[in-house]
Structures are given as structure tokens and as C-alpha cells.
Amino acid sequence: MGTLRHYEDRGLLKPEYIDKETGYRYYGVRQLEVLNTIRYLRVLDFPLSQIADFLGNRDISVIEEKLEKQKKIIAEKQRELEVISRKIDHRLQMLRDAANSTLNEIQIMEVPTIRIHRIQDSLKLNSYLDLEYAIRKLDENQKEPLIFLGKVGVGISKEKLDHSEFDRYDQVFLILDDEDNYQGETELLPARTCAAVRFRGSHREAPKYYRQLSDYISKNGYKITGPSQEITLIDDGLTSDSEKFVTEIRIPVKK
Image (cartoon, rainbow, N blue to C red; front, top):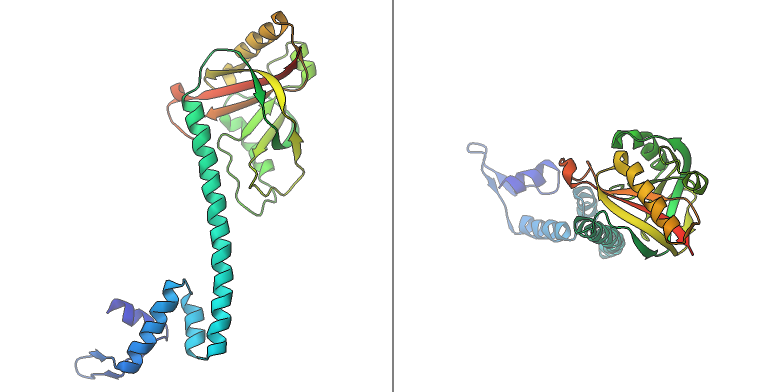
């Protein structure tokens, strides 16, 4: 009965008769037909305002037009849900990969092509809060909300890496999934060979691992070819337990 009263309050369904003494509402065949129409359109996700508009102007051409319009709306919602589903898959893959990381072991790995948006900026990171300004800059003028978890990184220039300067970063970047519609300049980083390491901790612990990478690169006859990429894959945004933080550093190299 609550639903019927709600429809009545919205002007969609009026009872056939209201008993003045008891206030009891009686509904006839005409009201049941209208109720069936309302229920049918609600199943199709029509808002009550559009249902009211149709009930005030019932016609085959009108309902055909509204059904065609609703079909387009549903198709767009399906597209949006597919994008969300792919984003969830990416995050699940990232989380599972990070959680099962081999730690403190330098590896030479092939990194596939990725799309990024980059901000050239000099910054020193003492905590994840120091990235707040950069994240706000990355999020400027975006029509769609962006997912930043595990996608924002920092880098040190090749020149500083060559001179073993590991205490200050030169850039902040955002890794973009294929389905991300980013409003701003983006670039494709081509597939490359990297010396990489993952460790338990965040950016504050990174200098130690940059020194290890630098020594490894030098001892094994590699040369640095570009800026590093450093991303905290699991951080305070995902867990309150700092013992579970995982950060990865990649430095592009060649023989």
C-alpha cells in the first residue's frame, strides 16, 4: 500500500473511490491497468517524472519514442558498467601482483608500452601527503572521476640518476588505462628494458634501493637511458598497516 500512496502523491495513480469515514482507498480495473503500466515502465528504469508525462499523454507514438530513448540510455549505462568492470579487473590484477611480489631482488624486466600524463615538478616526499598537490593537479578539469590507487608515480631524471642524486624527484606521472578518457596531454612510453626492484615500504625508503639499483646497473654493464618510475603499489590508501606497503622502482637501461 505504501507504493500505491507514493504513486498517488506523485500524481500517477488516483484511487477509484476513497471512503470518507475510513479513508480506505478502492482501486478498480482502470487503476490496475495504470498500475501495470507504471510497474512495466519502472522495470525498464523509467524515472517517475517520465512515467507521469506519458500517463498524461498516452499514445502509441509517444511510448515508442520514450522506449527508443530509454534504450539508448540503457546502452550508455551498459558501456559505463563495462568500463567500470575493466577498471576493477585492472585493480584486482595490480593488487594480486603487488601482494605476491618478490621483494628486495633486482630484476631485469621488459616493461610494455604504457600511456601516461606527466607533470614536471621538483619535490621531496616524506609521506604520501606530499603528493596531494600533484594529485589535485592531475585531477584538474577532468569530466570523469579518475582512480589514483596504484597509478600515481614519481621519477628521477637520468641526469640525477647518473650522479647518484636520489633524494629529490623531478616529475609526477599518472598511468592511464586504455579506457581512461583523460582531459589533457598524454604520452606513450614505448616498451623498454628496466632494472627493477620491489620493497616493503614507501617513498621514504626508496633512496636505499636506488643505490642498490645504481650499483647493479654499473656492475652488470648497463647504462641508464631515461628517468626512473617509482610507484607505491600498496600504500595508505589501501591498508592502514604500513608493514604491508609495497613500492616498485624501475630504471630504463640498455647494454
